[in-house]
Figure 1 (cartoon, rainbow, N blue to C red):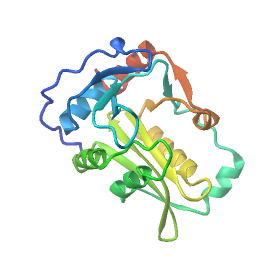
Figure 2 (tube, rainbow, N blue to C red; figure 1 turned 90 degrees about the vertical axis):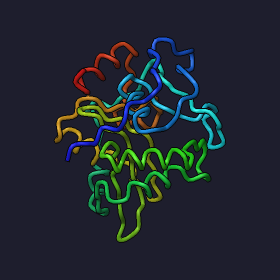
Figure 3 (cartoon, rainbow, N blue to C red; figure 1 turned 45 degrees about the horizontal axis):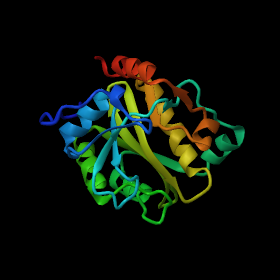
Length: 217
């Protein structure tokens, strides 16, 4: 099923090149479906301005460099292949729960507010956001979620309560993206953990060119 295009945003997205040294491009606007899609199509993504759950203002970000995972460059160790066999994996069966678990207020540096959960859940109902769920028996023990527009996927957050569960979610996500013709997997900022899995940094201009190709602009 093709995603449903929402009403256009009343906000005009600024160009990512005006970002400050932290990658902040603009503050304000809203989390309506049309605004979120316009932002991702422009190379921006939202987070509360102070990066915490209590943030009252929406910041729109474009870091330079930008973290991506090349879809042919994911690092999967043999031990992870063995570990995969101990889990079952689904897609888009528990999107809201995955996002809520990613936004657990007890996690350090949490930024996913209830308003963000509601906003991305609306996008999910329209077919724009997706989740991978990792289960052990009937228990949800890991997952990842993000936004997909054509051949572009923006990974937003992942969680695990059991060793390797988030890695299994990530491997499954990359396999789905490859199999369904995606070309750009955005992870925003690289971290030591993501770099160990194959994430690399690219410059903003290169990222924007890859984004335009991926979404068909």
